[in-house]
Image (cartoon, rainbow, N blue to C red; front, side, top):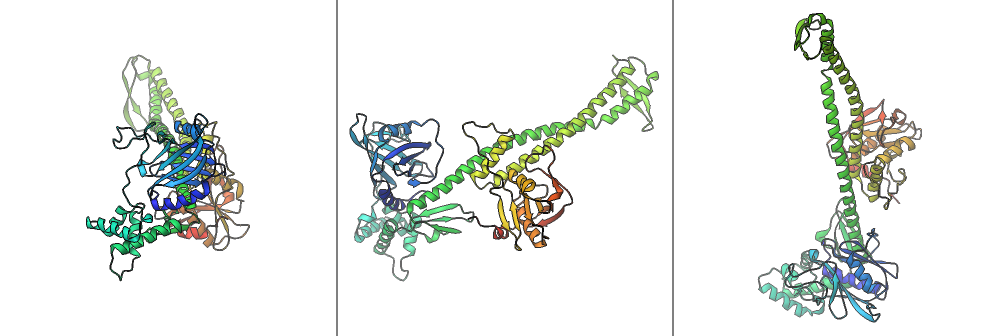
Length: 575
């Protein structure tokens, strides 16, 4: 969602107190539509002109910066680096904030620059304006062929975008009522009249305002205007900022006041509007960056899986061809047994096949003697048998690689954090699927530092790996011989370990661990998942096997219906 004008007004009040008088120590442009000021207070002030993430706020989120600063960043450094933020202003209750910055111009004389952040969805922009009102540049230029009404270009005088709505904070109730009555007279409903008449109001807020008016009294423009004015004043001057998140804890809405219709699975309140806005966009930014990383890695994995499948098909074709080897050997044998009956230069030989008790016609090459033809059959047989053996070995390796890549693909789809995704990227680098960027070294975490942790109903510690490296470490390093190892049958998933501490494990604990393994497997969305389990001493790693790839014996299998809610009840809460 986009920030609304009312929430922006509350945020503006907080920013004024926090940034007024601070000096701009550094300027970065981590993304094409984002600029970050590092202030003298060591806080980061972020400006975003993104269509989906437009906002201004103090942020704790750090992003990597490009090696070469973009042109707009260089321009900002030229004019306002080391400048001091003097004031923050908002146009009415519109989504436009202006930062007045005192800095020295090109001649070293004090000058007042204005950095305007227009937060209007895909029309968002960040514009630096000189003291004379002329635009120095913008993060998005708008030439005449894009807009004939308003150009945003260097040297053009800055003018506000078309506004046209009233600021209800500056109106008396009677004045606001008159504005509403005019809109209603034009055929608008009360809700649409509120949104269409007053800056900053949005449909959900209008519905909330009308819902809180006493139903026992007739709805009038005066009552609606009075309720709207109270709502806006409370939103701006006494905000109760909150984020509403879905069942996956993904933030969907934020606002300076809680709205009933926006209540979702989880509502989180914040002490300040800035913290609320920063948390909302930081969580969504982190999710966006994670999704971008996962998508890129999945493309790498998919490409390599396609190559493996092609190689496997070639090897399978060799095996199919090798199925004729025995028939070719028999033809060579029959030719050798009947050399005295075959004329030189014959195109075929008809001989008795004592394996089938019938006559058989064997093609010959007339250029060669019968004995040479026989040897050619033997030689062809030998090549096929050699190819068959090589193909079988290659198929074993390729199938192991395919299983490993499919496991990585599942691990990536289940990754919840950038650390999880970076672990998988490091594994892809280590296995040679990605060329390592020397400028961006991927740091490997200790694989035992962050497995999923659970406690069975009767007290057994249960750990589950988040990826192949963690699976390997849990099974081969952390678990002892008497611990119980579990894994989904024939599909990618977490290695799950029940740490027995020498005690006998209950059937209940095994069932709970099987559910954890099922919920953390590729089959989690299916009706039932088969889970293999055995003592850790029955699990071993073949020589040269890739991370997470093991063999096991003496296992039992339990078919279970994945129950994520039951699993979450067993999860050990992180401090």
